[in-house]
Image 1 (cartoon, helix red, strand yellow):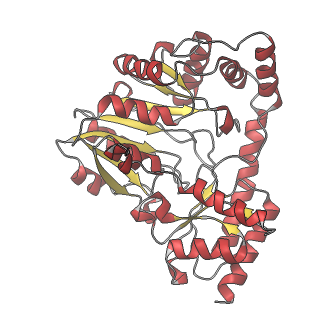
Image 2 (cartoon, one colour):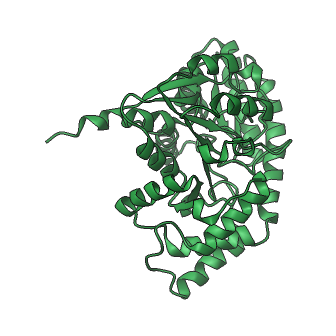
Length: 387
């Protein structure tokens, strides 16, 4: 027996591969500082955990509606209306197990072989993986460091073609921590408004920002009905293991996503949806404290990275990643990432884990204690000075 050919086009996430290698070194007694994996190092807030326990005791352990419970979708709609300033109806919302189904299901519903998809590079590796898996054509858009890791709009205009079917945006971004300026989003909206093109706007880090709130492309005229907005609970509520995300999309696409949910997951777990309801309707102070702590770590860690020989680190405006330029070290990205893990015990990711335009960069997650972050800087400094 053999696997279907399409499986050869399916990628993975290097973060989990590096995590396995790092844990293997830990099992040998090595001291490892984990800066590779992209999840908050905070506990899910207590009131959310208590809501889940209560839901289990009350019997929320059976099948629920494929699209998600109405009361949760209503709470999501209210949250989106407040945060994005756009009118959203609960009927436009699909609740799914994690954020990735809102990448996979709409792409599966929209893309034919040969359709072109413009996506950020370096970017979340599952974008390109899904594009290739569906036999569509990936069209990478380089994120430009000098532009705050935004697009070169002239290049974006050039790469739009009659075959472009989908444009993927991510702001705040993984891996760069960049935020797309409102003026750039307005220009992109102008270019797309009258085209037969959909936008998939990955806004999973929408509430983890450090300056002005990020703007959603759905704010611009004509774009709400052309956009799939992806968000969820994993990052802002430290609920990565709960597997719950959602998408906001036009009604005709909701129907397609519901069909794919029926054929794959049936529904999102009922008790986790009750926890999600508590997350949205309950106190937000724990999330706000988490973001404030991320800001403190960002400031100290990026200052430390910028003091390293051969490093240059732009200050991220959102998410919890630092993406330093390491060209000054004279080393390739993967070579340096591998050497840091093997020789210093600092687990980071090569920029090329996020695409070809990530060469010359490393990604560090600063979802770790300030003490460990500063220790990582010291270990890297010693490694660079001893080369």
